[in-house]
Image: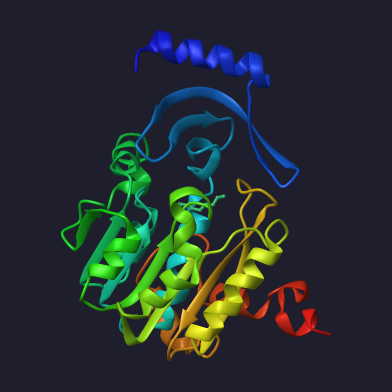
Length: 297
Ligand code: SPD
């Protein structure tokens, strides 16, 4: 894209929004001061922006929703990956659905036990953009353990016959092409690609803005997995500032995981947010309003 064109968009954006990018959701507006527009395209699936925000660095925006900023992406990516991978005693085969920016892949490959990692991303453009603008996030996509499949996660899961220890749903919000990933039918299909002691993690939106959505998701996941745990964390660039993940497991409970064993494995890697105390604390400090028992009182 030419610099003149980028300049025109920037001027239009500045005029329209006073130089701010706003993400709007359920009556709430989260604003980011834009320093530069680095990329803008419509792929076959979505509108893609790379913006430079003041203080937060470059940001990847898909269909007007911030997916990551350089400043705080590690919070999301460490927490979508490590609680599950440390709960499983020997995670060797991992499947990521979505996650074309490579952040989850980078975190998964910190685990020496992982031998094969399949990444199923529907939109090849996301991978290209991440490799061009976010090298610190996408830098492990070319690792020899990683196999990239440009495909719809739903069809990949239906057709695939091999089994995984861990499946991570690192997708966009539950609208458009990603909506199906949050439906019961897809989650039931996932069981077929998980080992008997497998673990699934899915990004699950804002506890404040999507309370009913989270409850619905937890309810049907409980029909599928004997162990379902939600955990929350703070991330400044997502609306509401608090975000959540849900973990479903057939055998291993993250709350019961041996802290000394986690500690021994974790000592061999570098993380900025996750540590063994965060692991336990995340699952044990779920706000009361999110607990089903309270709701039914
Ligand atoms: N509303 C933002 C939800 C973001 C979920 N996906 C982030 C993808 C980062 N790999």
